[in-house]
Image (cartoon, rainbow, N blue to C red; front, side, top):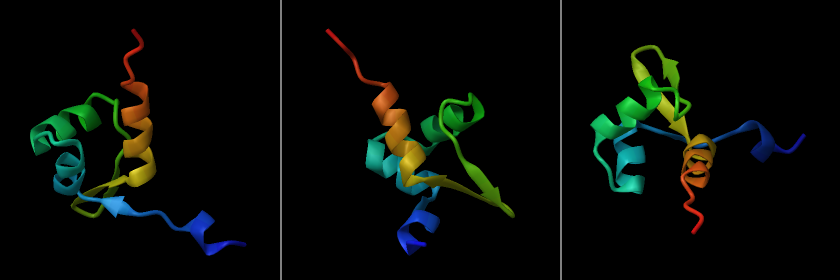
Length: 63
């Protein structure tokens, strides 16, 4: 089994907000609204890079 298929990079809400150039409040609203998948580890909230990429992909505007 390839180790890359098992591991994933996790981001804090602050890191995710920085990547999207939005506020942490926006990230929390997206999580609470079910638009962005996140995980809770104890008191910490983490977002996978994959789920952030999937969210961005769904935001594509087709003209």
